[in-house]
Length: 256
Image (cartoon, rainbow, N blue to C red):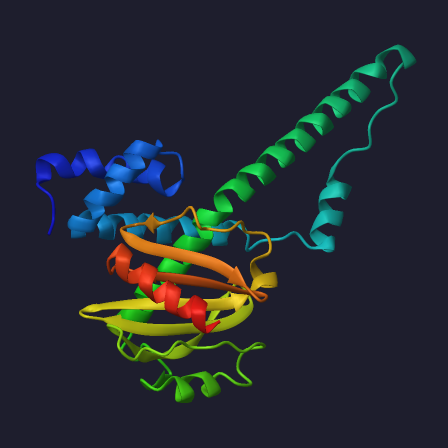
């Protein structure tokens, strides 16, 4: 259900700060709750996340090759000789610039580490939404865990266990190979009532630069659960209730 036009602008103006991880905690929590009930704001939030990822990916596409670097170096005129008394000025300037560059790099690195957690969750949410929107959301269709698990043999460089779902409200729909960066992993789809939940499993070393996301419980109106076990990293994402995700996570942890 969309919110009224008079209030929609007030919420959407906060989305940029929200996807950048700059919204105060109370405001972020309130916006999370609002997007659960407002389809238009949730869609706009997802669009902004996808746009941000596209811009970031575009910025990394160009890397200067050695030939380009050589041409730039040749285009720079050789420095003119300077009197000894003026040599201290460029030395000081170079030292100052170097110091600022190092400090800036350290700051950006710390900022990247702090926000990489949210970026990873946003990427997986995008994959979850894309899977559900696909005409063929899974490559192996089966409710039998003994059919789904062997299907991944030879397709991903690890194995995993699936839970016994008898006497639970969950149904295994199937699975597909997913990718996080260049690392292959498993995406499993479970259904509970009218909701579908994605369970992503990757090797832990493929996410070694990302902190645990136990603190990330909701993002863009989706519930999120994550943990590490036996060299694997698990992510459970869906729009079902928090209790449903907690229960499914418990079943998967017990199977693992």
